[in-house]
Length: 358
Image 1: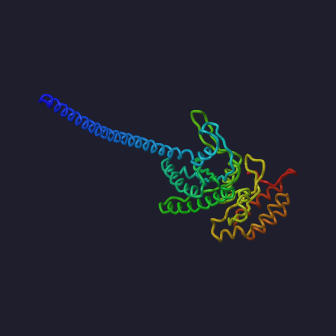
Image 2: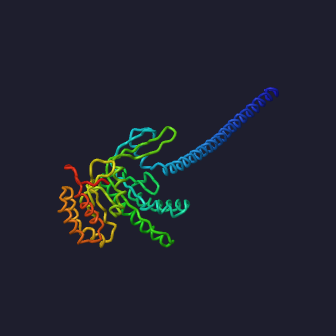
């Protein structure tokens, strides 16, 4: 092999070596580049994911705030009722029927009270009062449907609850409301404010929960005969000087096993209703002495009321006078005596059922 051939072979070997090194380095470069790009892509993906999660969390937080704000105007339980139906959205005209316990709570003498304070003092008072009355209702699985001036309308209809449980919740809430009022009046006394009193009426029955209004402005509402009865029972509390009045239907739902103390008040026909109802006073929140005094005349009052229903006026008056001798200060006995003395002089129809229209 001459020197030219040797030189050519050396050049080929050198070229091959350079090419091999180039290819090797190129592959390494590509691998490193690919790895770097992969890391960069992963970083970008992670960055995008983090940004998406941040946007999602912000949207979720905003939705939660809106939901919490919305629930201050529309009770969560009302929306849950809609969710348990086949309705897709809470639109105008939505309606659902259910059996619930209905409570009305109202401040006694509110009109005169509101005239003695300034508008700002009135608003401060109402907000303070409503705040304290809110917990006893919610803690007993009820919800406030409406604030109407100084009045509260609440429903007891927790999901999965039996009629008895709903009725018991309403009665317990009423007892807790009376406790809350006692505490509130203690604070008012310490601040040199006059005490307040309230009446509570409770009934159990079917209601229609729905939406009313127009396409531009609608509101949720609960309507029905049962709502009217509960409202009328509360309105009767001043007349019978009772803190809590409930219907016989509510007590029938509760049953005899529940240790709530009550006494029969009257047989009445409330406004807007044809059928009369028995009404009872709840006594469980009173002292044992007060309970004993009211229950001491219960049998005589019940017997006198039965005679009144049958227009047996002299017998009825005799029973009530006996009750009066037992408890001279009982306003219920005085009420029944006055009714009998007035009605026995009236020309009543033969089919009069003994119910007072109140």
